[in-house]
Image (cartoon, rainbow, N blue to C red; front, top):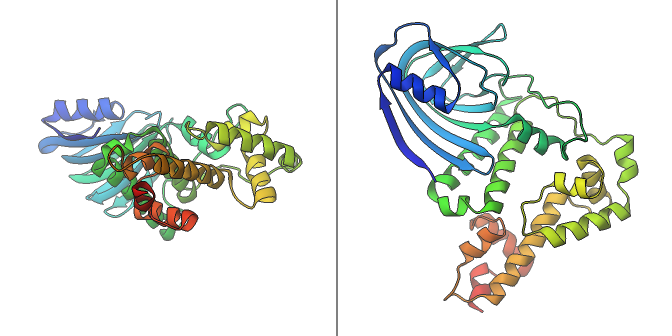
Length: 316
């Protein structure tokens, strides 16, 4: 659930909230005015979203975060110093706050931002697949987006997930919906910020992308679609890499593992709608159970597959 407008005032309380929310903070100058902070926070799967209002003009030192913090600055300005580099952030910018293992300093005035906090392990899982199949970690090599267009896509994705969590907290708490939204956000981050993820298949991956592996993957998907499974889980089941799984699905089925899983879940939602009645269930409840937010996108996909609206199926 969203924690709406937790507000503190005074330097000690503000520093304590920053420390408990992110990392230890060391003000290096007496802040101007009376410091204060307001925070709204919402977990979405394995990502935490925060909306922060900070009423303070100050320079602070921040200990290593131990997490990846992707930030969208709505108002104000921030000057960062990290790893010997200087960065000036202005309203409208998106950026990765810092390397999880590096301390940094920040100089700022009052500002407002939305941030996504995620563990490096989850990013590695989304990018690479089954843990243990890759020895090298994923590292982000730049704090800004690779292009303005990529930055705009990130803003849209972040806004969508935040709005989902804020306006439909019960739906966002559905395990499959939350997991899907969290992975969508991380996939967008991997496309937005420069990083070391290697997604091209190797020779071994091409050898493993055979029909037997795909049959095993399909059986696993269809028996586990109600669970929070990922391409990483499919790769682990098939004793191969996520790249081989992707290549095999494209080669033999002309689709991706995620698209195939979504289609299986869409069929399951259709079957549940047929079995239910408007008196004992709703489209939103059934869609959420199978990982879909009840949105125009869901309706459009459903109509393309079954040639009627989900509400019409439920009414029958």
